Image (tube, rainbow, N blue to C red):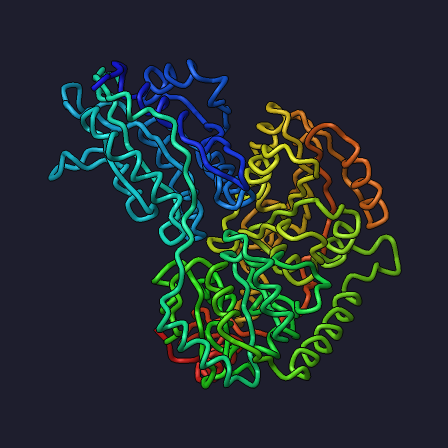
Length: 615
């Protein structure tokens, strides 16, 4: 057996450089790049190894490990989980900064690979700088914290361990059911060790993503249930996009006359005006989709984990409704007593369609959905109508309407936290499938700008729009600088509403007084507003503040003509929102001195009586 002698770090990098994936008949690198911040835990060995292959496996310097993780997640989502970015960090705080990004990826079933430094396996210099010691367990480090937020975890304490560990990490990240982040801790002394690795380990390998098919007995049950349905409904989740199952779902829905509603992750499966599209469902949903969900008797849930924002904390659907779940993940497919079709979405939809024979839903059912959707569109149009006076502070809905109108069909929109996700899910009209990213699984503040940087790395001929509030900008903005440094342009819209306005809304809705959310309600000397334009310009971006929607429209045209990241800031109304009619179960105090809280508590108790019983 021929061998190749190199260090563990060099072997890791060489292995990653030889992994490819078949995407639509074209072989492309499975790992197209690395985000890196070097410290003493990874610079001397992992850094040395990456430097030697920078023309094959390019390394991008980030400003914060967490934001590098967000960029990797945003890239993976836009690439439909077909390519995976790597993030390397030093030990201690450099590594723990990645925990939140790993949480985002874990919740949303998205892959990225973390290669992080660890304490010395030999323990001779212990404790090293940034090592957290556990007095009763010397094997434990902060890297163990990642076990809670990763799909695959390992610590390398001897060189040859990577021969089994790296392929398992790759297999996990490419598995439709197990997909998520992978973490490999590399002990510092092990990174430097040389070993005679078998040449076969470094052979070029071309991966394919498997497409498991449904169990035939369960498929027969699903077909029988659907053929008895009077009011069938399809919920399209993010898994439809990752399976590239849009065409199969369109055929099923259109030919069978089944209305389709979308989850937050599934928004963008179809264009807004597609004949079977009835709008988003749930708390951030449309009155049209929620009305049909309440009446539906059989629900086909495709590629969704059915989180509370989709189900209205399980009040959107009737207690009698039956579910068929098409999902690659067994855990998700078995929720709420569904008939579980554990399979690839595209394969499951096709076989379900084939088994239905000549069956079609009553045509009046889809027509009801279209009429409801027309009503919803009129409501949105009214909310997006421009104010009569140019000095009026616009609402989020009006800003979304202008950005949507100015965006080209192929342009990509990103949001994650605050009030903007609700306004985008409700009011953004998707012009081209696969151009909408609302990270609402973890709803992670700070994801947006970094994800914009990651998505822009795809180098496609389109603009990447990122919409955030002032609170999110203050939390994590350093990748404005990253995007300028690397030349990956995005257009960043900062809607300044003076604090955390959507949480203030929730606080008030449940009877609480405005407290510690809007700047005017915080313990501050005065509500000072940041000059976001000056700040963005200091990082090399182009920037402009606009005072009304006409100026916003002109500024977007200017931003699209620019060759670098551009920031546009506009003041927005913190109290005006697009209505939604699905209930959300959050904790409300059982006792309080405030009558408004007690009133909200009584309403909460009544609403909980409507929740479906499920597992």
